[in-house]
Image (cartoon, rainbow, N blue to C red):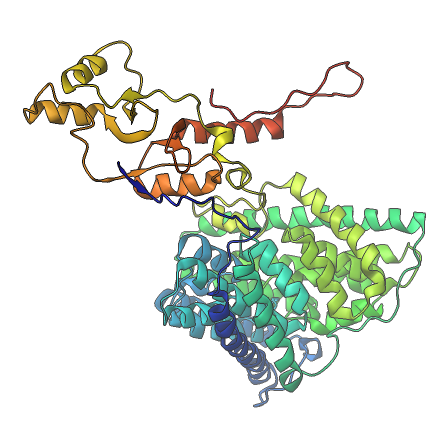
Length: 600
């Protein structure tokens, strides 16, 4: 009898999830990674404050300071240019990965870099971001801390024997913990991980990310204080007219988001055509920042004070118009220049400005409409609607705004998904030659049993066939496949024979009267079982580089069918048909046909 590979005689018991006890190791590591990311977040915020105080107010202090307090002068032009020049030098001679806002780089490391980030990135990214934002860059700290927290998780994982998938889990745990530390939004950070970074929904990755965010929010009061970052006590009274207005705000913000994304990459293309090295581009971006600062100083820097003003409805319409125009222009130019800084805070400001302006003509508190604009801009631009909704709730502590936020953010998300093929994050990666799909779905291979896809009955050869007869068979028109299962008189599997085997035996001078059964080696035969999940069989076929697998009955080894690569591809065809084929079954007098997964 042949040696059956993976031949357990009892049917495996599949579960909802594939997570095993190694998740406890990842949970332990997530506690360490989360703590490290909180420390990195605190250090980044203090570095930004230190650079801001040194450059603009000529004092040594790590206390937060708003650039709205500065008086425009020639230094308003010079300081951002010098900051951009320093960043260009750091990127040229340190690490090019510090350029940009961090999240695309984290995604790229996850998808094509084996979730490996280097120590140099963990050091230079927060330092370059502190210089960029501290010198007036209109960016947020969340992108850099996501990159830095991810680097911490990746570096810790690289010290141990972890798989690429496990390294990804710790990288994302560090990134989510960093975002939690900055904004105090653990639930939104977990959702950001799911919607943007993990590219899967598995307990193996989700649980450690949750643990890292929980430990980050536990540490946060000691370093950043208590309570929501931007409290908003007011809310909107739900009514049919107000719900329609929420849709209108979401749609308008979605359109603005699409314009901003398109302009950003248009300007990036302009920079790419400049006849100078990219090292000098951040200095040009700094010049744009300085010019914008001469017009509206509040457009520079992180702008958390501006977010508070928008939510408090403290700004008149003219001030908001000026702010959003200047902020958008300098943010697009500076980000396209390849400097270092995050996109989230600027998006909140620009979305909040749109909502605030529309709030002048809508019922209810203007700050509420600003919040809707912020969430809609975040959810639509980053294509992470659930993150945008919960982020706004946690940021303000106002759960009464949940339904309006849901409507506005979903509306903006709908517009941007239909308007643009890629988001502001994935477009950068696509320009480097990588395609990313952001849609999650259940693997059809996990839903089907082998009995549903196998070809039955299978073409077999009798084990009593002689070598000479086998040669004649493979040279005849009856030969259709490269290999065949061998069956005994009872139809049980006793081996596999291929055309290459027969030619080898012939060239070696094997006796032509010997049967195929007699020439079978003791090597293991890969088989499938009718009650086996197709995904398990496909994995075995890939690992063993086998294109055709006999399906046998447990115990008796009777050949029931055969699965080939062609049959597996047929599943893909059936899935595509389920998405594309459209028919109506009600009112046409026809019964719906039963969908089958048989091979063509």
